[in-house]
Each structure stands twice: as structure tokens, then as C-alpha cells.
Amino acid sequence: PRRGAGLRREAVLATVPVAVAALLAAAGPASAGTIGASGAGDPYFPLSGNGGYHVKHYDLTLRYDTTSRHLDGKAVLTVRATQKLTRFDLDLKGLKVTGVKVDGTAAGFRRDGQELVVTPRHALRKDQEFRVTVTYNGTPKAVTDPDGSADGWIRTDDGAFVAGEPQGAMTWFPGNNHPKDKSSYDFTITVPKGRTAVANGVLRGQHTANGRTTFRWHQAEPMAAYLATATVGKFKVEQYTTSDGIQVYNAVDAREARAAAPVLKKLPSVLKWESKLFGPYPFRAAGSIVDHAPDVGYALETQSRPLYDSAPDVSTLVHESAHQWFGDSVSLTAWKDIWLNEGFATYAEWLYSEQHGGDSAQKSFDALYARPASDHLWAFPPGDPGSGKNIFDTPVYARGAMALHELRQAVGDQDFFTILRAWATEHRAGHGTTAQFVKLAERVSGKDLDGLFHTWLYQQGKPNKA
Ligand code: ARG
Ligand code: ZN
Image (cartoon, rainbow, N blue to C red; front, side):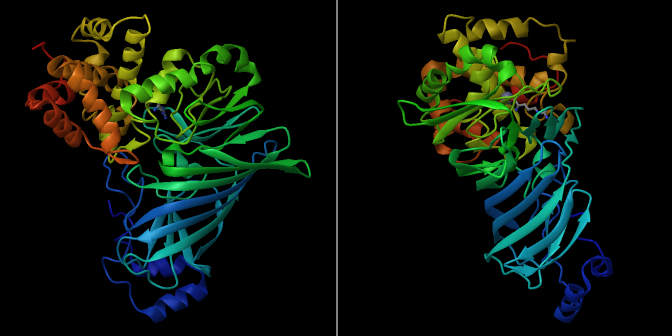
């Protein structure tokens, strides 16, 4: 996916400002191999992410007018080149870009679909650290995903529900929009007084002047772009610190408050229970955003602070909380591995039920296994769902969890829980692949598990029981 790479030089020159074009001409032709790829190489979403650099930090300054729906944005990215770069892409869909600077100097730029193509005045050396500043504005529009759902900046009656999985981060800030690349974040978000802007991590400050309130959030631990949020609404806010020192910030739409209260009360005990199973909670902040967004139809494990479209039930709270370990702290390198997120979070729901007086995991497994071979559950294998259209479908969640249950049956409880914990610990704040998980399970158990994983993750149709 080097879609931009073959573009002729004339085409670039035709669209960059004249002064920059003249400089480029003086610098001589861009040699091959110095242009950052337009995608991260993920066949499910070929244009998501980009090649040639790593974003260390995003500093996002946003102002959202909940009446006009207008967003003003400034993004300052601290970036390290992983190759020599005469040109590179950021992902950004919609909105109007008013300027791009690289290390304070105006750079050439043009739009090409979801790619913002940047031509710095001087080539960037491999390993060079540089700063990219993008100013932009407009009315953000959500993206429609291959499965028909919407994600990104989704407007609500009193603000916006901002959830970026898998593609939507590019609807509200320019960046490297693939979970392969993780970064720390600062958010400075200004909204009309009376509205609250909730992002990830710790609240650093809040200040009201001239009818507007500015919220400053800091996400220290590395985060994939799709897990960033800047959700805006009329929220009731609750803040406290748990006995483990985790800073909790809950923001709840008044229309959901009554239903949400008994569930949110369980957050500290759920995190404690998950910490016992999976190892220490990976972030310094936690909490929930309970919005009232009836058209959305899903929740998202936005890092440190999951986002719900309505009051969640306990199972959903357990699911999104489990993602903090599986999906957020340990990230995907490719969307086809999505079962590492959804199968694990679903299995956490089964375990929670089993250990809190509900159905056993075995019972959950059996109920699913009883479904006939024609059931949609068996429509495709979870280890490679085939396309971006299928990543949030039942086989990924349910058969993914069944694969973990089969692993547990094969290796026994002691090794199984050692494996889960080792996975979260060894890949903490990083990435993991299915192949690495299989290797870990084999190392801990001393068993050859290729057959088991092949059957449950990759075999077409309903597996036969061993
Ligand atoms: N990861 C979310 C969950 O926990 C689902 C996100 C669905 N996103 C979407 N665009 N449909 O289940
Ligand atoms: Zn999930």
C-alpha cells in the first residue's frame, strides 16, 4: 500500500504553494525510498496509518462550538523519522487544513482522500526528531465503517460522542491512525460553559472565562489513536481516588444517571478483580463516560476511561475494563488479530460471571457450542475474520472467547491464568500478535497447542470437539 509513492513529481509541485515548490525544485528530485508510505500495511484498512515515522506525542488543542458544530484544531506532533523522509502522510478525513509547519517552517501540503500529504522544506534524516504543526477547522463528520457502523466524531444533541475504532481518529485530528503506532497525548479542549469535555488520562486543569470552559487532559502511557476521545456533553462529574491510587473521573449524562449509578459504583471492585487476574491496572487514571447517544449502538474502551452510548450493564463494564489490559495496554499490530481484544474481553465477562454467582464459563461455552453448524457464530474463523467488515461480529467475540476456554481446558486453570497474566505483563504498554500468544501459551504449559489454536482460530465452520 504505497499508494502515494508512485505519484509523479509534477503532480506534487502543482499543488504545493509556489514558494515551497521553488524550494523543492532547487533541492532536486525526491529520490525513491524517501517517501513515507500512505498506509501502515494493514490489508483490512490499507490507508490507515502511515510509513516512515513514529509519533511520540500528540498535543491537541481543540475548540468546539456545540451550537454551530464547528471545530477549531491545532495539532502539534512530536515525531521521529524511521527513514529519510522527503515527504510523508498523516491521516485526516474531512475538515479544512489552514497550515502545516515542520519544525516551525511552513511545509507544502495537499489532501488526497484521507491522506494529508506533507512535504517539508528540508528532508528529514532517519532518526531525526521533528515537530509537525497542523492547524485545521470545520465541522467534523463521522466515518462509516465497512460494517455500516459509524465512528469518529459523532454529534449528539448536546455535544459529541467521540470514539475512533477502527478508523475514526482521523475525523478530528491528523495523525498516524493505526494501532501499530502508540503515543502519549495532551488535550486542551474548550467548550461552551456548562458543557464538559472529557478525554483520556488525568485531568490537569479546568478553567472558565468569557462563557467558555477549557479542560486540560494528559494521557501519559502510550495510546493508539483509535482509543483517544474528546467527548463533549452536559455531564454530571464525579471524581475520586481508589485505594490503589487510581484517579477516577466519571462523566454521566443526566438522562442515564439513574441507570448508570449502581453499575459505575462497581468500577473500583471490577478493576481490583481484574488486577488480581491480569496483573496491575496499566494506567494511572480510570473512569467512565456515560453519554446519551441512542444512534451509536456500541461502547468503546477509550483508554483509561471507556465511553458508553447509554448506561452500561455490569457485563459491559467488565468487558470495557478488561480491554484496558487487552487491546489498550497490549495493542494489535494488525486488525486481523482483533480476537486478541474482543475474545479476551468477552472471556473476562464469562470469568466475572463465574466468580460472582452467575453462569460458569463452561456453561457460556456450552450454550454457544449447542448452536447448529448453520448459525452465524460459525460463519468465519475469528483468527482472521477476512475483512474489516467482520471485525466486530459475533464469531470474533464469542468464538474468540471459546478459543480461550478451550485453551483453559487443555492447560488447566493454573497455567491458563499464568498465561493471561504473562500476556498482559510481558506486552504491557506495547503490542502483541496471535503468533506470540500461541508461543507464550506453549512456553507456560509445555504443550504443543498448534492444533487447538488452528481449530478454534483458523478452521472454517463449526469445530468438532476433541
Ligand atoms: N471495541 C468495542 C467493544 O468493546 C466495539 C467497537 C465497535 N466499533 C464500531 N465502529 N462498530 O466491543
Ligand atoms: Zn470489546
